[in-house]
Amino acid sequence: MDRGIIAMAGWLSMFICSLLVMNAKVYGDKLVDITFLKSAIPKGAVCLDGSPPAYSYDEGYGNGSNSWIVYLQSGGWCSSKIDCYNRSTTPRGSTYPFIGNQTNFSGLLDTNCTFNPDFCNWHKVYIYYCDGSSFMSDIKHVDPRTNVTYRGARIFKVMMEELLSKGMRNAQNAMLVGTSAGGMTTTLHCDKFRKLFLKTSRVKCISDSGFVIHGKGFLGDDYREKYYANVIATHGLRKSLPKSCTSKMSPHLCLFPEYYVGDIKTPLFLLESAFDAFQIEYNTLPAVGGRLGWSNCLGNLRHCNSTQLGIMRDFRNTLIGALLKLKHSSSRGMFVHSCYLHGHILIIQEWTCSSLQGNNILANKTIAEAISDWYFDRSCFRQIDIENDLPRNCSSPLTPDLFVQKCLATLSNHGFPTSNL
Image (cartoon, rainbow, N blue to C red; front, top):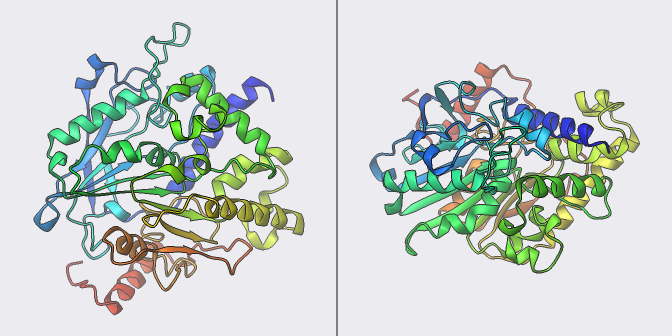
């Protein structure tokens, strides 16, 4: 494929990935100010365009005062110099003036204890993603032709130093979480994150829609392999990739979680759709000419023909097969459903009340309940929907306000107090 086309495809897929994650309206009860970490600039820990990294922080209180959630933003990758230059002129490659002044905290980050009872009063951090390399790159010199800087690893380091200085070093509970590219980033940094805390601390990681498959032998495997190999080459990641993977196979395959997640020592939860919308549309369909000819199907699953449904079913089987082949870990949790979705954890429809969103529950648990039980060791949750081998439309026909009302009623029936709303 022509290099320029690959660059454009990478930019479009990153943009659509962000749209898919943000598609549903969120219901956070708090807008949190953004901090631009200007002290990172002298350390070279900057975004693609040289602007400072940024985060939003909401302080915990009460019995959550020693507990922390660190969330890593979604946003794909850039796979060539021109792709990264284009990205540097957007909110996924620059923080100023693009990202505004506040972040809406919702879902897992919601500060409302009705919608988020187990984590509402924790310290919560939202880290903006502006390097295009899953916080892995560290190239010393700025590109002289494009003036682009590849320093994602330094951003992650200074961000962790910043949070430790705010008290995270004393955390009794800590969680590293990310969605989409942020989910893959979470798996790549999970064990490193664990080392920041005392051995007595409960530290776990959650990858939301971040298990991007290579799927050798499945439609589009050559495209996926080439794309992520280009990401590795563009950002100079070979030495930064998981050694458990590079010691066994070619480094250009070692961004695919199926080849290294089994060696992660820190407890990890994988939240996935077996019919991940982003992976099907942008990592699979390029092999059959892209989304052209799929608009009716993607707009309404009832309009998919047998060939299209067959490709989706093959994707599902490939993803589930990769998950089942992972090295066993008693601490690994899993929630793999059949809704045609991408991204869950910051959206009330997919977090607190996923039971109302296409009845998206497994073992009678919503996504929020499953992850909470797993995190607090109330149960070891590992469930895959093996009954539905076709994608389900789990979008709600309810208006946003009516959905919230029904969500409140559902929570009330489960014994959660709702009088504070």
